[in-house]
Image (cartoon, rainbow, N blue to C red; front, top):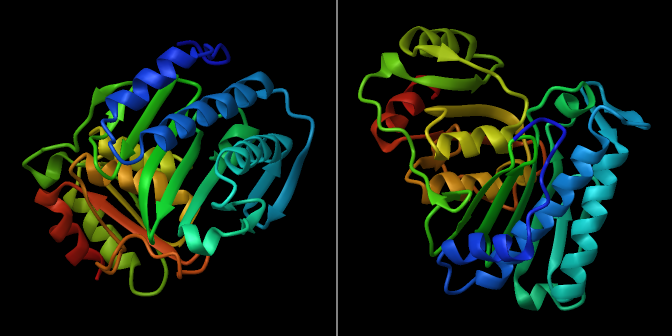
Length: 284
């Protein structure tokens, strides 16, 4: 599809995508996440390159009116459909619903991952929506409105791109890998140089969720990022990558998802099982 001309998906198409996810336990939640991601994506494309309000959120980050519009849309719909679920998003933070502790469910949302790209007219950004139940992601949707690509997965189903199954890349040779290696800090510079020499190419795209989704479908072979991530960056795409066959951990080799980890302190390493251990050893 053409940039700036995102097509409006029908309710039937969204329902079909959810059904293809084959989630016996979370079919309605998956369908809702797909629907809301598409609605948020339409807001993004309507205002793409026509922003009226861009504000600095930190020394290296910005927030736009689109972030708030998309986040509000998703939160209101989730609260209406599942009033006992909690909500955790980048701009709003944590919103605990009555009974949320009893339900054990929280929706984790990045309404516009890649805001700097979006604000500068760079067409690499997405909506990320995940449902976490009993401490682990069980539904994940990443929607790229510029390409009209819906990446979706559930804990009991396959990972899909626009309804078609996707799988992590299966390249044999390390020298053929294309990776994102967003690691730095004391002790990692030399290791990063070693990793760069071992692979074919490094690309930094500016959207953690969409890059992780690209690992799921084989466009990227490795995604490695040190501290700086948050739950909303990886909750949906990490599940999608995992269900597509990737091995996903922290950069230290621990479990990739832990809600107790503070925002901006998360790290991620996702790769095919063939190469994950080698990449992990490079950064340890």
